[in-house]
Amino acid sequence: MIKGSATVLGIALIALILAGVVLVFSYVQTQELRSLINSQQGKLEEIAEGVKSLGSRMNSSAEQISSLQERIDELSRRLADVESKFTDFNSSLTDLKKAIEESKFPVTVIDASGNAVTIPKKPERIVSGAPSITEILFSIGAGSSVVGVDQFSNYPPEVNDLVNNGSIRIIGGYATLNIEEILSLNPDLVLLDAGLQQKYAEKLSSMGITVIVLKESSIADIFNDILLLGAVTGHMDEAVTLVNQMRSMITATYQKVIQYMNQTGSEQVKVYYEIFPDYWTIGNTSFLSDVLSIAGGINIFSNESRAYFVASPEAIISADPDIILLNYNYGYYGNAEELISKVSSRQGWGNITAVHDGRIYVFSAGVEDLMVRPGPRTAIAIAIVARVLYPEAFGITQVPNEINSTVIEGWGLSLNLG
Image (cartoon, rainbow, N blue to C red; front, side):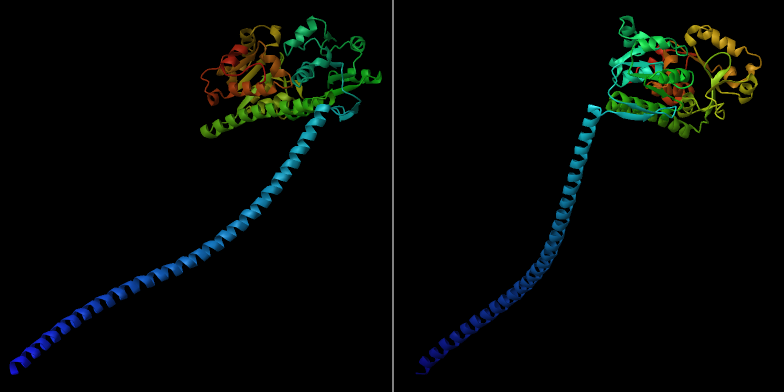
């Protein structure tokens, strides 16, 4: 009985031990599970905090997106307004170009004499009294309406061809116009230069001929005359294009010179320009004074109000120019070498800086024409003079004393604009 009880007690004890083991094991599992749960709970809280932060950031992003959308909408509205304005502008520009192309007449302009001149319709028979005027007319596409020119109008080359085949007639010299010849051409517009041709303008006007007088005393005057001729001939669009082309070339030359002078600290050179022997030169009311100035030079007679005058040798010697420029004048006074020799040997000129340094230059062989004619090719004249005055600015190592077409072609220039 006792033995049986012991057995039962043993079994019970074993069961209790097993239960304890199970309990301990369960406790351990529970603790591990609790630890795991706590760990996961921490991660869950981190995730929840992340989700909360993400939600906040999403709300912020949503607000930013909403704000950005509002800005986009506003910009779109502004863009639409700008596009609308550009559409209106382009429409207006198209209308303007159409009006220009149609050449609405009558046109009234104020010429250099201060006279109001009305052109009732597009001219079909134009007479030009000066080479510069002829060049402008052909440059803006009005050459087909020209029926008469002075004897010195030789550019563009087609002018000579038209004269030779009789399409254009010569009306006399620049300062000796033939009134009868002009009248015989039955012109509906005569274009003359102020100064020497003023008397012809007055006489023709008194005879009922429509006359416009031009005066190119500066670069600005040249631009204005080109635009004026564009208006009265029905070629305004071409005139605007030509002026812009000239301005671009002149600006490029000027900037090149200024850049060189700033980089090197060079001073402006003083220039004496003798257009005719002996001592005929330019004052500040000649467009050539502008040419010198824009090219970086100083006209030694820039304080003189007369456009052209005879200077005193003493004044030239006293001014001591760094450079002397001469015109070839079609060889009437000798070739380039002879002209330079005559100038250099003048009494008292040996000490002039330009003579001493050998910086006397003659414009010849076509170059002198574009130099002295206030027209489209004045932009080229400025480019040429700038290279003579400051050759280093343009990568030129040596400037020959005679400046002809071959020389300027070597400089990348041409007798023709464009």
